[in-house]
Image 1 (cartoon, helix red, strand yellow):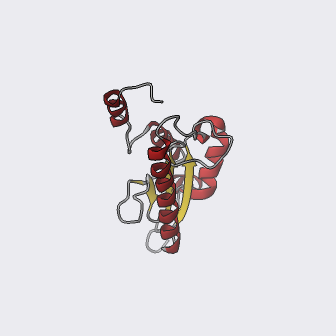
Image 2 (tube, rainbow, N blue to C red):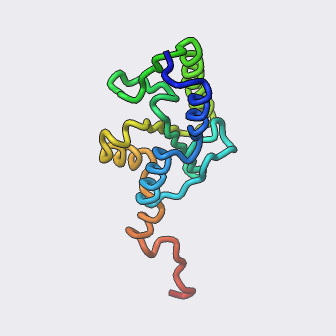
Length: 158
């Protein structure tokens, strides 16, 4: 049974954001610190991914464990609500099915997809950094630091 009135529940749920969530902002800061540039909520591909790297044909989705039904059985954030399961279960399962369909569409178009779950941000941040680095590869700014003369044209006659 819900401990809140319908009006209280409605007000609380209206505060849930779909974009620019705290987990998404954490991932953005991390990706920026790694030297990568990205497009936000890129509408030119299925699913409007949270971060898109069009030149690399790669996208990152930052999923909330509750809203996207994190399949990890050890995730403490992926619990089901205690009330109104007849409403919540189909809604949350539809989110998961939509995520899978968008991922399949992106991969069929030749895009690589990385899903980052909300719980990963606190469980093992160093592992997350390694996953992102493995997924994206070196940044262009890292390449410029390693090869400062790359892309320069020698003077005529030199």
